[in-house]
Length: 492
Image (cartoon, rainbow, N blue to C red; front, side, top):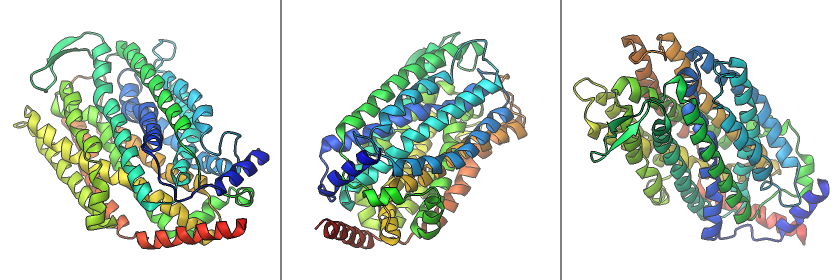
């Protein structure tokens, strides 16, 4: 691989590191976000619900599976990041992982929902399947994240790229959080005609909590996996790597660089902690939403239509992100949208009052504002990763995009895990019973804490963390110009 790395580095140094990206390249890169939401977003949104209802294991056991797998990732992801930074392939440094990791990832993600009696309720199978899926996912997610910093150094281009990729990511969210539960219910047994809360439309929806619904989950998941892999291939064939480490930098990468980089890179520390908190309360909402709709509101048939309205900001209002950031500043951007998230969450809490449960308008309003806030805050923060990579390169003289994205991915996955683990343990503590059609007052209170109060508390903590991020656009532009000038001087 060393020869391939040398060729790639030499080729990259001859390209324009401040390149303006074509729309084809922007859309192609964003297809990778859509793909990962279709592949792994399905796991984050539905796996705990599936395991504790259809699959038949307890909430505590399901949460423990999430916990153990994420602890494994704590040690696994840094190794993957260092491996990716040290190695290259004939077809590129980061792009080939989309193929080599994408194929087994899509297969394993589908097998998590394997609908055969021999594995139903088998804790060992659930654990091994989820562990394998998570480990493989690192070999897709980390190189894909590193690609973001390898396309260009132009800060405005990165900002535009972020809006495009987050638009596509939220199209993936629409397919996962809106249509996935609907498709599963449509394919589930014992269908009944129900008003889905959207202009009086009725659909035949089955019981997706039934042990007999396993085949419905597997069929829908398999289709999503195939589409996801096609999107990964769109990224692979549609982008060009330009800003890559030199051969000398790649050879110097060590596993220990992760800890050194994290220790020295102050903006990385702040952004990493923000990632952790942000994705924790984001996945709180994603994990608990089916429980909240099924048991607290009592209208699971409205889930698709309400999520459809909630998806609007993440698809059609993303173009406002760079405009708002320029108007009010980087940190104020996050303050504004996290506040919007809190307002939407409080409206969903009011919606659970007995007098308002049948008011679909409250569900629309709360979900719209909540999703607008969370998609903006957790989406736009990805645009800060390339500047953190540049800061690390400027201060340590090593461009370790893979390691930095491993750190970001690690915080992301810990947040994802906590978003699934904590609600699971809360459900267990408050005596949630997935075999019952109605839950006790205590179980409903546990769902409320997971859906409403803990996310609000964490959103406030996230604002405090972002107040410590001091890297300005002017400073980022200066560092990138000096880094590019230094590289050109080395080549002359």
